[in-house]
Amino acid sequence: MPSSLAAGSRFPEMTLPLVGGGEVTLGGPGGWRLVIVYRGKHCPLCRKYLAGLEEIKDDFAEIGVDIVLVSGDPEEKAAATVAEWGPTLPVAYGLSLAQMHELGLYVSDPRSPEETDRPFSEPGLFVLNPEGAIQIVDLSNAPFSRPDLAGIARGIAFVREKGYPIRGTNRAAA
Image (cartoon, rainbow, N blue to C red; front, top):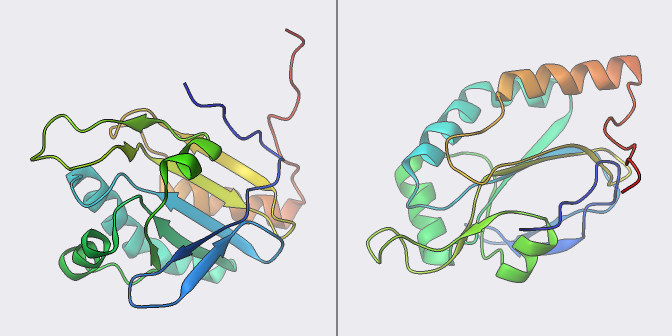
């Protein structure tokens, strides 16, 4: 089982290549950012989820939240994802197993070579605040459980408008 990054902790800085060229650095101070980790090109539920995100991406833009999509797929699969699925958001690729574990993501082995050819992360969602801290985190061990993205956009707007604190930071004694 992965060790989750705690709400309020710093998101690890990592630089990943982007489909189409360039790179993106996740973590560190900056603006508000939504990082969506998807399972990979082999996942039809990811395709549907990311298509829904495309439909409401302007809601995030209106509240000043940048979005980046991330997977462990190699460049050729990530490029095929962009070509076939049509996301207009930045797509980073090449998330390593070590990085998946660092982020606390659940990692699965493929069921067969037809599914994919390497271990892959299960879904993860991170909202990073301007200080680079994790404002919201949602990790799943299965493709069927993912947060409602419209609700996430509304929640970020509320957090920003009301100065709402990072929740879930109290750790009970073991």
